[in-house]
Length: 204
Image (cartoon, helix red, strand yellow):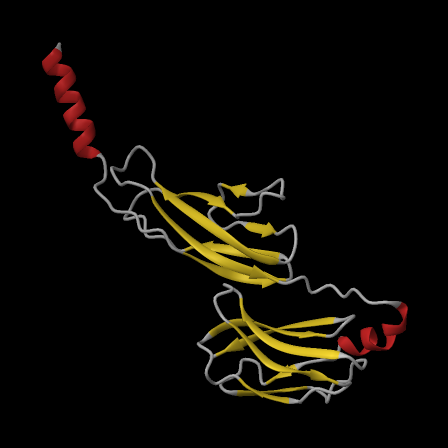
């Protein structure tokens, strides 16, 4: 009886896939507070299983078992998102975890009634060329209210942030050089005392 049990265990163990799991993920799309994640883990032939933690405890859906989940973050900020890549019983592989800081920006406008003219013009406000290699332009010499103005470039992972312009007055420059930034997806953020304008910029 003991020999039969040992032989069965040996056969089951031998038939299980010898594999190594390497966890990896990317961001497929980001729109304001909504982010679509893509599991790019190497499962070595094992059936892929994922366990996500979005680092957003204020959300009732802070975790997910989907391979490519969509998460709406509770507010703007930088979140430490972790993917634990797992395997089923058919594999002898151990799990692997990877984490990444993801920055989201609320693209909704919070303005008073006196800013209705800016709201109307915001829909036609563009960044071009986009994707950009070095220098991009704004679609117009954009005018905000007088006061403090800051133009910054922030990566979606939050590990890069560069202030492109800071000053006072109603006008900001129309041309910016981001040649020193690495390739990837960024947020162009224009802030005034009472207004925030956000556009996505792809650096290639």
